[in-house]
Each structure stands twice: as structure tokens, then as C-alpha cells.
Length: 309
Image (cartoon, rainbow, N blue to C red; front, side):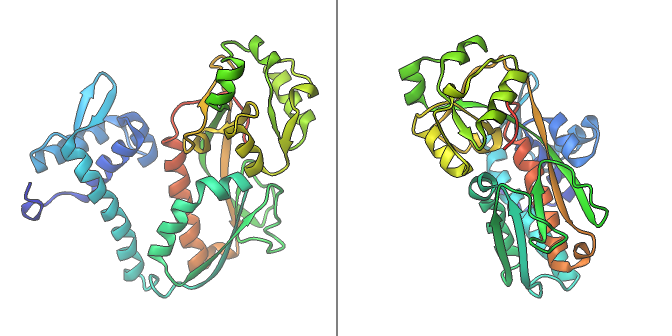
């Protein structure tokens, strides 16, 4: 394919990129705030402009063709380049410097945020990022952090917050544990299994009781207040645990178990101080995080069954 001889509409590339990353026209339409028919027309127009088929359409599923997979890498590079061009045009690119403190849970800091920090370093290489890994809520008003990722909406009037995604979570275990203890096929089966607790056992017991599973403290013989340590226990086969799907899908050491728990979703809020949001470096990081988290949650799939960490 001779890419140099082709011109196309950037909106068509955005439509293709969102569809490829979200897996369907309906999901891509939600991300871009467009209607599904409009998005479908844009993808079709791009295929006509390029003279190739980008997706194989099987029922409602869309599967990238080989030309589509080739274009996907270029489209992602174009998106990042467009962001850099925008910054240069407004005099903000290489000039953005200073420190931005981002606070999130241990699990988010360890497993979710590193890819977006890599992108941020490419866009604003002079920026210094301090990632505050904490499962407690840090006070933005006291400047303990500049930006916070939270799962509850902040109520303080001096803060601004954006709901960037509705994430899901599920119940996971290592194959080594499941091969040894058996794979539960119903909520009732869970009563005989070992669990790894994230934090306080009574809260875990209370959650499962709300789901109709009568677990006892004795089911939670392993656990840690550290989310990273507890998740490592799960991966090593010490028991089952709840985990955000966007984290679990990154692990090759676990599989999802029990499909008939009540589906549960949880919000992902991005929060900063109203005053700080006007700073160029804060606004850049805030917007980049919002875009990344929305796409990351969407790409984790429809997997439900547990509360957030």
C-alpha cells in the first residue's frame, strides 16, 4: 500500500482508532460522543479512501484485518503526534515543566498507570511526576497531591471532578489454586473456598453477604493491607480474590471464576483542585489521564462480579 499517495479526513482516523480499541461501533460511539450510524459511515468512508477492508464484520463483532492492524499502529502514532502538535501550537509542549503529584491506590499505581506515564514522558519530557501510592484518600486541599484517582465523588466545593469511566470487577484465582481446590460453578460453591483479603476482613465478609454468599472470617486466612501484596498472593495460588477487571486482564497468572455473582460496577473519578486545574502542567496531565482511563476501562471487557479496590 502506498501511504504517501493517500489523503484522508482525520475524523475518519479517529473513528477507526476508537472502533479498533473499543471492539465495536456502539462502544466507540459512546467514547467519541457520536451516534453509531455516524461512526459507521466514517469507518466506511476511510475504507473507501484507502481502498482496503479494515474490519471483518461477523454479526456484531468487528475483527481487524491485516491492513487494519497495520493502520492501527500508525493511527495511534498520529493521535500522539496530534497531541504534541496541539501543545506546540499553543506554546506548551517542551516548555511544560515542574512537578505533578498523582495519588491513586497501590494497585492502580503498580498495574494501571505506568503506560500512560510513558506517554506523558514522551509528550512533556521536562515534567516531573511524583506517583503517590496510597489506599487511603489523600487531601487535595492540603496539597498532598495535585490530581487524585478516586472511586467516590469528592464533595469539597474547591475541587473539580470528572467521571471518566464506570469500571467493573470480578472474582479471580490462579489456575494452580483452582486445579487443586476445584473451580466453583455457583455462588454456593464459594463457601468452601479460601480467599485473600484486601484490607479488613469484616468488610469483605459484608460485601459477599450482600451478594448472597455467606462467608466466614475463616475463609480469609491470607491477606494484606497492601493491594499489591494481596494480589501477589492470589497469583501464587493462595486463594480467590476480588479485582478490577482492568488489572486482572493484565495478569497471565489468574483466571476469572464464578459467573453468577451479581454484576457490580464502580466509578472512576479524576479530581483536582479548582485553582490548580488552570495550570498548564496540571491540565495536560489531567486530560491525558482522563482519556487513558476511559479507554483502559473500555478495553477491559464486560466482566463483572465484585466491588472496586
